[in-house]
Image (cartoon, rainbow, N blue to C red; front, side, top):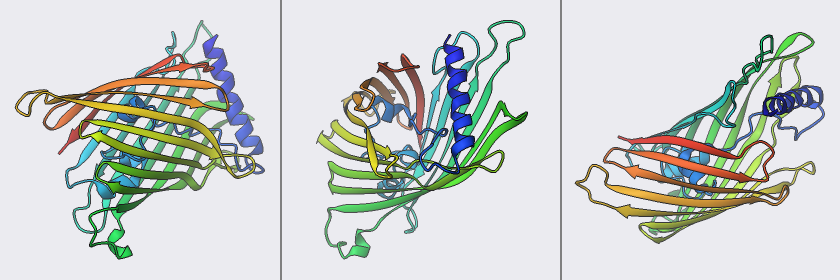
Length: 332
């Protein structure tokens, strides 16, 4: 039953996108950005104002401008999003970030991959496949020195931008032609560090972003606008909150989620193999669908890398009960 529901959903997404993309500015049928990174997902997505590791490339490139010179590579993998008995839906995200080493800003990159293979329930059943990539290059830089504020330690102001490429292939056919899509887009971000333990972050995604479907139809992806705050109660205990929104039919942002998260570090010792353990939890609510997301996770911090895990439980969701996310972050 779940497989049939998923097939219908994907078919509707493609048919609506291809049939009405020229007339609609807010179809957004594909390339839905659910931000799969393990650490941010453990905070239920309240990460825009934090963005202090390799995940910054995907979540807010302005964070690259505030990173130190150490490089960071974050990898997250979702083995099977919907627990299908045949086939599977897997996702992965690789994000890289490094701070400003030459005076021209920090750099980063991310690759998001989605693979849908619904398999066959019986002999002669058609296997449905869907593959989606999003590749982006990131840049972020502190700019307070250009605003006449270099003599002050705070606030620190960083801006960032992403250039993105989208690609999609699928076995679904319209008029006996396999459907695919590709396109380009941009993101912009801002982080203001009021103090060393208090940030305000804003991220605008899919600015001037469109994709071209097979058959020359063009779809403009809806922009996403996220704004949040980060507060460090102590060096080992942080809180974050965020409001997520998306372009509506009226072109104005429509709130899609209220998110909040907390993270607590337990220090074990610098000379230990596992130097610290970080516990995190979060929750979000979609006010439009009255659906909820409760999350939790942890990281084991070693000298040069961490092992990350996140669990999300969805309440009143049409397709998902829970999702496990496994990640590793390497520092060098």
